[in-house]
Length: 472
Image (tube, rainbow, N blue to C red; front, side):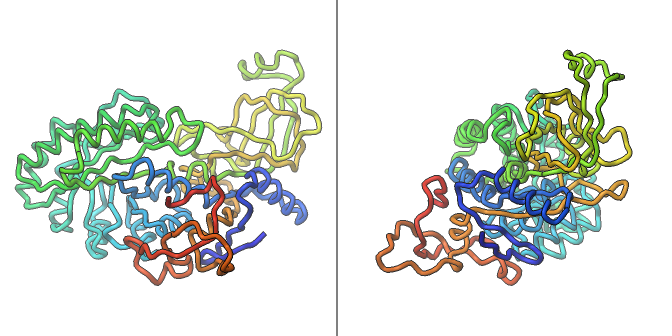
């Protein structure tokens, strides 16, 4: 298989679009076993991110995505999204700096942290990142002193009677009933408030949450305009699902959201609409594969649930693997996530046992799975966990001296060649030309060019597989 470079120390393995991801995992495991290596590793499908981008543009054409860097700040992810022309939601000086170093223009960044450090505001001013959120009076004083020409977005609390994976309204957001008073304060200080934002919560489980939030935002939007503000921006935040097992699909949300936006913010209002998707782009693009470094059979139980599950009296296995809750599986605590174990290779004995899976540290908190049903596995075997791209590697630590997993990237060759037509061979005159796609900057050029809106000069390329209908 062909391997191409994508920035410093980043190699992308290209493969047939029909190859299942577990086959790629098995190939990587086989390669590691030849090297007598048992290290955990991430496998990142950059093509999956491109597919998510295409789906967004198809289902939410009026909404500009500003990727939430905090969700996964992997350099290849940021570079690819910058290449696609996506904007960025940054929450700190470091995140702003990372994005700017990619050549992204300040106008493609929203500093979407309502409570910012003074020095970070000054840094934003220095770099001309002028779009930022606020939700309290003290923040107005800081911005007045550090960046009085900033363009401000008032973040409000959306209705809270909907199920979400992670609640955010308990920390951020001005109550809509207090918005008028806060906007008056902004006007007294001569600050430029340009719009309204909200965040329904990370990993929303009910599409109607967006409809209710848009309606509330429209009411505050109208109040702001009545006070004399020239509002022209609505930021609908994040919360969009990123994998197929989510309680609600992205299509369901898009249907509800488009209806609400067309009702309260129709195109004739000339309001720019942006969003801050994070897990949507990366959750399903990453899987992690861990190695069983130890195991033991338990026949006497302190845990009542485990004892009850072992109805046949076969005993229960405890597997210890080389990444855990203090590392990439921190999402179990921080993101209220759940994970699913997949066997890399078919087991010799298919009989299932009560199983718990533990991380490598010496802390009893470090448990990945409590009561799973798995066949008996041996020390040295690998277990794969899919949908591990959101709020995982970005928040992992090296507690107890445990190393971070290695990272390997792959992509369908058809997708890669569509993104980087300069890598394509010129087709023979008899070859059918069926598509015209925009010329995009090659990966190694991203550090040399400012990215805002990519050029749309057409170039002929080879036919894509039917399932990979990019930029139609």
